[in-house]
Image 1 (cartoon, one colour):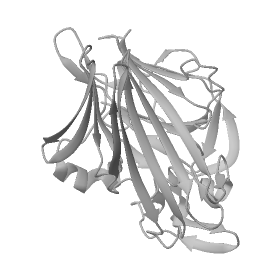
Image 2: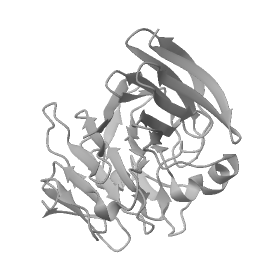
Image 3: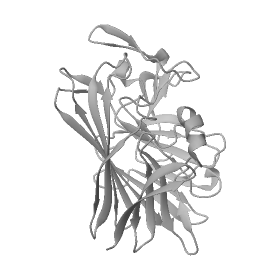
Length: 317
C-alpha cells in the first residue's frame, strides 16, 4: 500500500507519522500540544527537507509553546485580545493567561492534549483525526465545545488540514479558528519570493490591535522578493476560486509551498521573525481581537458545527 501511519518517539515527543511511501513525503503531528504540525517533509535529490520550523525536543515545547506558538492551534480566537478583555451578551470577561505584552493571545488550546480518535489508510491517502473537548477550562470562556482536527496526507505532496468545531453548550458561542505554522525553505527569508492574493491590510495600532480601518496594500499581489520587508500584519484575502491564494518560494533551491484555504479562512496573518530563518503564514477565519470588533466572528448555535479547511502543497518549482 502506498501510505502508512506510525506512532514514533523523537527527542521525547510522541508523534503520529503519516507517510506517502511512494514519494517519501512525511507529515508528523504532535497530539499532546494542541495537535500541532511538527513536520512536513518532502524528498529532494539527495535528502529529505522539512518545511516546518518546529521544536527540537519536549523541553523546548514545554518552555516555548506559550511564547513562540510555532504551529499552534488558534481556538477559540486567533491573535490578540487587548488586556484579555471582551464583553459577551452584556457580561464582561477577562482571560487568565496573558502574553508578555498584557494581551491574551492565540486562544486556549495551543498546549492542550488532543486525543487520537481515528486513523485511516488506503491507496490514496493517510489521515488521522484528533479531538479536544473544551469544558469551560477558562472562566472567561464559559462554554463547551469540541475541536476536531483531521490531517490527510494525499498525493502530489498535499496536506489537507480540516478543523471542525461543534457547540456543546445550551446557547450560541463566539468562535473563530486559525493556525500559526512557521515555514522554512532554507537560508534567510530575504532571498525568498512571496505572493498572496490581497489588496487590503487591516490597520493595527501600536499594540497590534485592529483600528477598524482597511489600508490598500498590494506589494505581494504579484510574486516578489521579500528582501528586508518586515511584516506582522493581517490581510483580507480575495476569493481563491480554486487557485493558490499564497505562494512561498526559495529560488536558490526551488522549494515551494502553496496555500489553498477554503472560504472559511478569509484572513491571512504574516509575521517575519527577527532571525528571518522562517516566516509565519497563518490562515485565520477572523481578524485579531474578533471577540470585540466582530470581524469574521462566528456565533455558532447550540449543536451546530463549523469546519475550516486549508491545503498545503509542497513542491520543487
